[in-house]
Length: 290
Image (cartoon, rainbow, N blue to C red):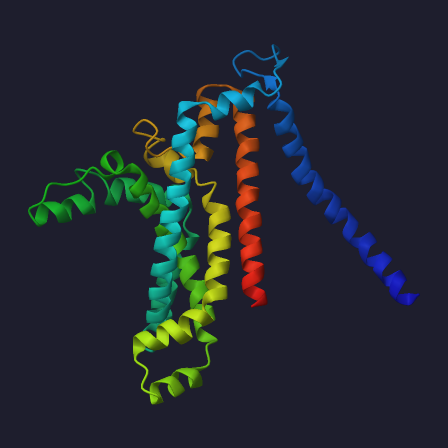
């Protein structure tokens, strides 16, 4: 009886937070769903008419939609590849004892705390600028022609910028898992004649599998909505070369002033993100059960 009373009390105390969280999520989602069914132009307020599913058909048949989906997948996949591989490599290096280890670790994770707009501006104006950037200076010093990164390789440039911001997160998670590895296993393997590569493949990598799964799950959810780096550097161009799904929704809303199509695009983006999230959550669940 006392246990039942305790449960009811706990639920009663949690209910305000749960209700507020549901309202915080469901009200904006409901409004977005409502506007996605309207023909709603921001330049002509008061002339809204019910349009059914026409906004969804218009958004999906937009010539930029296919390019946006491909760019989104390439952005997520490329960033995950760089951060997972680079994070594992950096974590192994930082796990070794050396002088100034604490300072190096702090400098390694510091990019994660820089705002995306600030990091994008730094990369755009100080590193990738075709005339005054550091990359252009290095290329000129070596006798090569400088590359206009944001014009010639816009999507790859954005992948580099985003990866630079997320690499510290991956490194930190993997380093934490790496430090929990029992050193006796490695010592025993070394005594049996195993080399560094064999130890990494058969001992270190399986131990890091859960940490790597967590990194992939969290990064994927956030990378599906990359926006600031694109807006600051390429503005989705040239053409649609660096337009992802999030930027396409922004373009429909605030460049074409079509709130209905933008809302439909937002609902489609939410559905796709949830499909990816469910798949990754199931994957991480199987990994944690193993």
